[in-house]
Image (cartoon, rainbow over the protein chains, first blue to last red):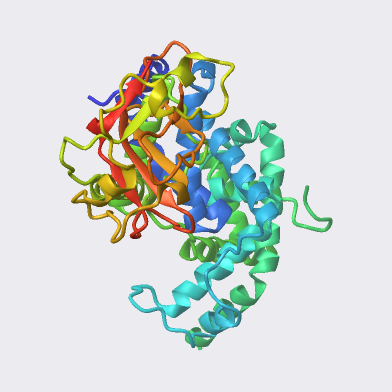
Length: 199
Length: 259
């Protein structure tokens, strides 16, 4: 039977590296996805995911078990992501490796992605969603990602954000409203397409 | 929280989207959606938005090899911190720098060995040439090299040949093609068997052509044993390095130390 997070964290606190490795393997996919969605950049997410678990190791003695390990991990991930954004704003690292004009070509479907299994439309949609997410304030972005992609409850989101459950609900509501505005063109196109297919 | 004029059912609608309603309330919302076109449109738009957000999920899973590398780096770093080792703060590993460092270190070492081998030719053992004065090591007042004249030293050979002539006969790859004029020597390079010792001073023009000995000051930190001279190289004026024909190498066992 697999050890629980609390047991593994207890062993990590006493310096067990294998326990840390098991925690990394267990939680890395979710934390990486959260960071990738939050930062909108694969390389930055890769760096940040290692930074998160390094902070887990560094601050292992401060974990007292009162907070769930997953929530504690997401708090660390959120802070690591915010640090990464601050660092990037100082160094002005571009989000995308695309050259000027290629973003537009990608959206219009003119730019081929060699070796990519995704359709150009799917890539374009992904970029639109990513760009919309990046325009949300960090707290709203956290709420939306945790709610829509990771199906966290508002109680869990409140625990991660360190706010009340009601506040988390308000933030999620505002994030949805903002996303609806930001993706309005795509939503309208989807609606026209569905109406056309019904006729 | 909600805009004015919205349907009063809206709070439940939010909870409905978040799947946080009990079964009874959920059924009530479903019935309301059948009767309220405004809420029905709102619900449809939210469903579309959710589908769109999930379809355009920017996240991609890391490749298994990357996961293994990140895990290995993390555990290595954590293990090092357990041992109290100091590591750089950057999280991202230098993937190429480590092997390159090893490569350059090995290359530099091999190049240094080759250079030393090139500059230390095998010479016949019977060539006397240079004395190294140990007085400089023990006399702190002495800062400049002191010339040891033939009549001052008990270690002088009976009939010493002029140094340039003897050196010119050495089977050395660095031996000059013509007799070397020590008086013209401007620099001296001494290698020792210890890294902490370093020669100071320079060659003195020793009454050419009847040169018998050279005096070299050797510096060394206090408390350490005196260094042993491995080789002495005389470099003529205008010679940039020992590789040209104006340089002379004195074999190590020809070096004598004076007390």
